[in-house]
Every structure is written in C-alpha cells, then in structure tokens.
Image (cartoon, rainbow, N blue to C red; front, side, top):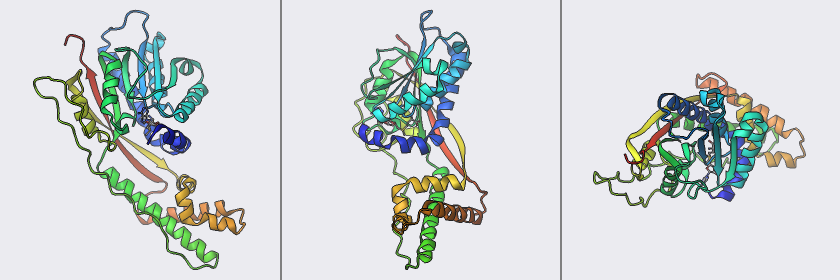
Length: 345
Ligand SMILES: C[S@@+](CC[C@H](N)C(=O)[O-])C[C@H]1O[C@@H](n2cnc3c(N)ncnc32)[C@H](O)[C@@H]1O
C-alpha cells in the first residue's frame, strides 16, 4: 500500500490492529533497556542524549512503549534520551502526534513524530543508538533500501529491532476463528432474512485466504565480504522473521553473528461484543449481513439488533468448539535483532 492508502486506512488500523501489534513495542522497549544495562558502551559523549528511531511508527505505540521504558530506566532518571518516530503516511503521523501529545509530560517532550520514507531517512549517519520497526519494515516494498537506511543512521555497535508475524499453528487458529466469524455472519443473515419475511439469498462471503507463500530469500553475503547486490525480489510481500534475518545478514555493516530471531507471544482476549463491533465496522461484512437492506426498511435499531444476534451466535459458536468465551486470540510474532559493526571491526 502507498502512503495515501495507509493514511486512509489509519483510523481503522489504529482502532483494531494496534491491540495486537502494540504488545511487541513493549518487547522492543524491554530489549533496549536490557541491552543498555549489559552493554552501554558509552559511545555517546557526555550530555549527548541516547537516541532511538521508530521506523514506520503508525500511531506511535512502539515509540511510546520505548520511551516509557527508558523513562523508568537509569537513562530516564538522568533525562538523557530522545525518540524520533517516522512514517510515510501523513494520516498515521497525525494520529501519532495526537497520541504522543495526549500522553503529555516527559513522553510528549521526548518523542518527535515526522512524515518520512523509511527508504530516505532525514537523519545523519550514525546518529541513532537504537532503531526499532514494529511490523513496519517487514512489509515495505523494496525493503532492502530501508534496511540500508536503518543501518546508515544507526551508530556502530547499536542494535536494530524489527518485528514480523510468525507463521505456524497460530495462523491456523486465527483462520479457524475467521471461519467461525464468517459462519456467524452467514447465520445472522439467514435469521434476518427469515425475520423480514424474505427468502434467504445466497451469501457471498469470501473464504479465508490461504497463508501467503514464503517470499524469496536473498543469498547471504559470501565469505569474501563483498557488498551483496540488492536482492531483486524483496518487494513482493511481507516477510517472516527468518527471512528478515537472512536479509539483515546480507546488509553491509551488520555484525552477522549478532542476527537473531526471538519468539514473542501475546494472547489477546476479545469479548464477543467487541468482535461484533469490529465486524460491523467492516463495510464488506456489513454488506454481507445485509445491514443496508434492513436500513432501507427504516428500522432505526438495526445495528443493535444485528449486534445482539451476532453476540448470541458467536457465544454459541465458540461454546460449541469447546472454547471459553470471550474469544482468545493467540498472536505470535518474532523479534529480529541485529547489531551494527563497530567502526574498524
Ligand atoms: C502494520 S503498520 C505498523 C504501524 C506501527 N509500527 C504499529 O506497530 O502499529 C505499517 C506502517 O508502515 C508504514 N509504512 C509502510 N511503508 C512505509 C515506508 N516506505 N516508509 C515509512 N513508513 C511506511 C505504514 O504507513 C504503516 O503505518
């Protein structure tokens, strides 16, 4: 998606997706503070703030998580850190600015949000002590250039942290929940058709998409240490963390042995009411349910009726699968961590 599409999508993304992605910003903040307590190599001059860059920041949740953790750390006690958050979508940056301002105090003072492309960062070489990208660079088309930029602005010895969704059984459980949801939509529609005295029309709801095939992984740089040619096929789709790790190993200046993939999991608990709300906010699912049809029957309480039917049917469907209500959604992601070579190393 381009910047305009992300801007348009920003309110919906921030309302629904951040509850899943937000947790991984916390992991990044924890990792930065843990690394600092073991390896603060004092490369900064005295009085120079510790600087963190959040690339493709969206609503700024990762930047805020990192800032919160730095505030609580020794570094924060001394007040010497600064977080920059960039995104190429002006709509996202506007939301990030609002979010940061709403936190006030030290958070608002520490974070600066700017519109910028991950592939042309407006920062000096080696100016950042750490770089994070929460579900950001993993989906940037042509992202090899974004890795190179991230490494350019990172100082030697600094770390980059990037998250990506992990494939595996959790994807299966997400798809199985998706199927329950679509079945519920079908059932709600059939019940409403009966209620309205019309024959139930065939329901046109897309089946859940199959898991995306693995993207091509670029060759790892050879023992000669020659700069790798930018892989041609890095722009097709979001990559897994293992693929990101392979890519990072091939970026000039990365300490190959430092590249690692860490498993992170979080369980999101969603009430059936919240699932119904999310569904009814989705224009295509609203259309599938036939809400527009009911609206045309001048029924002012249509939303409430459909919502209550969805909640009842979802509760029944999740109970039938012997699962507890509310719905538990296991989100699995990986954190890819890499270190930039120190000068002269
Ligand atoms: C899945 S969202 C993640 C947002 C946020 N980091 C989070 O965790 O919620 C992906 C973000 O990448 C941004 N993005 C995509 N391509 C970009 C690029 N080339 N430069 C900067 N931002 C980009 C989008 O605008 C969007 O905000």
